[in-house]
Image (cartoon, rainbow, N blue to C red; front, side, top):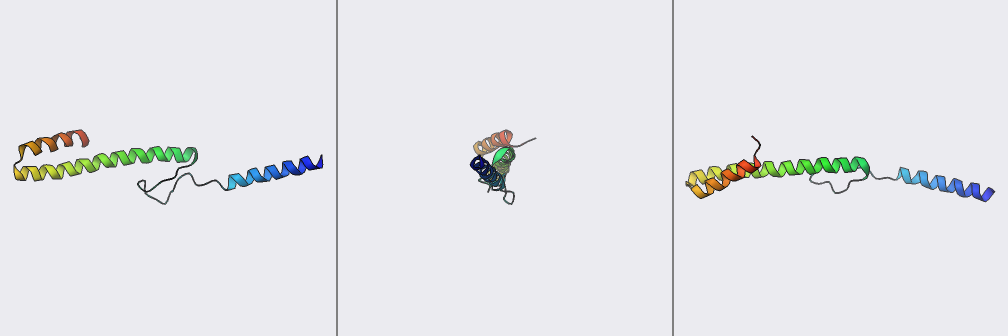
Length: 95
């Protein structure tokens, strides 16, 4: 009977130690581009927010690049490139 109590006590101690050693939900000190590890429900929620941020950032970058390329195409009077960059701008830039 006493052995069961000791065993139960050790199990409870081990389980409480597991909770203390859980990693942080996500790497709070890093930018979304640099985060690699997400843990638990809070980490999953942050991973989703980071994915949305990264997709929006990619679209903003494509939009900005297309605007610069459009200005260059207009300077070169390259109608084909103007049409191409205008199409990219319509697809990636928020109005």
